[in-house]
Image (cartoon, rainbow, N blue to C red; front, side):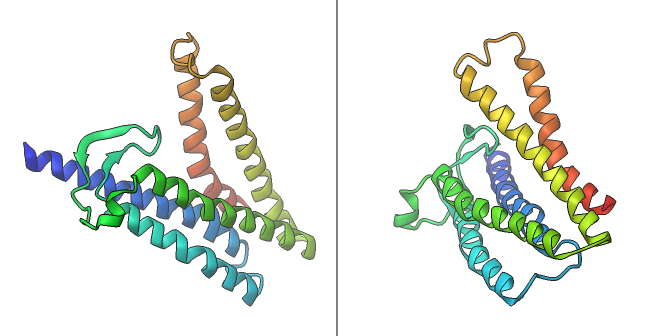
Amino acid sequence: LMQSDSLRAAITQINLSLSQVMVILIFVYLLLLFPDGQFLSPGWRRSWRLFAIPMALLILLTLINPSPIINWATGEGALALDNPLGVNWPTLETVSTESLLYTWAVPTLMATFAAIGSLFHRWRRSDGQTRQQVKWVVYFLCTVVAAFILKELIIWLSNPHLKENSVYPAFETFNDVLAVRAWVGLPQFIGLA
């Protein structure tokens, strides 16, 4: 039983780190290279490296952090176990996994906004087919961002009574559909463009 819990905790922690990598690849790197597979200029490539180094370091620290495993979606403890992949490093033991996730979110959000900025720059300097391709992706991003803002606004306005509300199951369904749409939709829209 103990090995099973430890294995489940290790898989959960690896899943968290792989999810972080997926966010970076889909919402940053893919947008920086869209539509021709090239960075806009060597300066954009250097900027990507500037963001990629702290993001990768924070993912590694999250993976080896000995703090209890958390559920990334809710921020709550998923398992009542410490991370079996954790390294007993005194400085790292004082930092929670949640703090590392919030710290990782800062360069990731900055890189995402830079990637969206690169799309607008590509759109401005392009014509014809490239402009149409970029327009599809920007349309999708604007729609998803607006839906996420609406979701967060609902949570903020109704907190802490949202779970007690009778519309909570519908809200959970909306949240799940929105998350799937964001993960699957961007590659679909890039394929469509």
